Image (tube, rainbow, N blue to C red; front, side):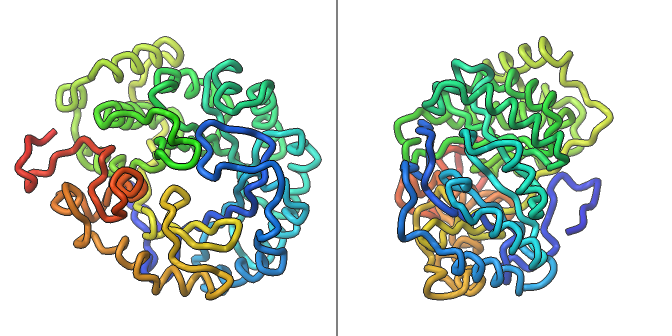
Length: 388
């Protein structure tokens, strides 16, 4: 993948009709935490119907066989460390030429020795979740006391071992004002990427309150504001790319996009903690043009293939066909790669080809994976409504 430095969006220079850019494999749903937002509704023990070691190796072989550029693979859960063959799977994928990352839960299984084993097996990155700025907030979110302190320690260990570190933060209406404090910790942790997840009401997350479209817009602008401090990714908010295009080349951003009450609070707290958000020497990371089923695929613990982990519509099973075949030929996957099939505001949006809306938010609220994204504030000119 090459990047033109002047362009506000990173485009994939590979055929997303032929292969995914990234594959998330939920290797198990077993986890000792009880997170309030858990997409997977994790369970205490492993499911006997999980993909076996041999089936997992076959999945990795299939992804490697597409040749360069091979998909990135993230092993997630549940907690991947609940699988005794985790290191074997990492090593197998690495030996096949895949870039393998791991997204573990922070439990007593996540020891320094376990991380050394992952590194030595070839794991390129580890992602940890930090959903609050202190122990009371994060541990309340995770359902287990002591997880916050253990996460801070684990993040430090990951970096000491020379593994790339990603921090994931799920943002809801309850923790949104903590984002600047989380940012300060993320910057201190020297992360390679901060991925901010915008809550999709699925799994246990149905019981939490997602941001309103207006609040989402303000947070996305704030994330662009602080992009020079840390590389930022907005998950399940593809309109982050639309905002990048709207802001490109503008000098007086606060006049063009006036601060609302939420961004005013976020800006003030960021100024207090970080000394302001004026542009620094590091160029912000342009958002990547990937969406559900378009460069992205998710495999659950049973081998079912989905466009996204937050979009529970199966496109097929790797027990019946190779993932790459499912990705290329599934009617669901193919439809998600065709912006002309989108409906509602997304169907007439001037940014449809580069954004496409969150298909997960659309499905969660309307049951239509091609419907309009209710989390987006933008009013396309063709809709006849007043534009933002």
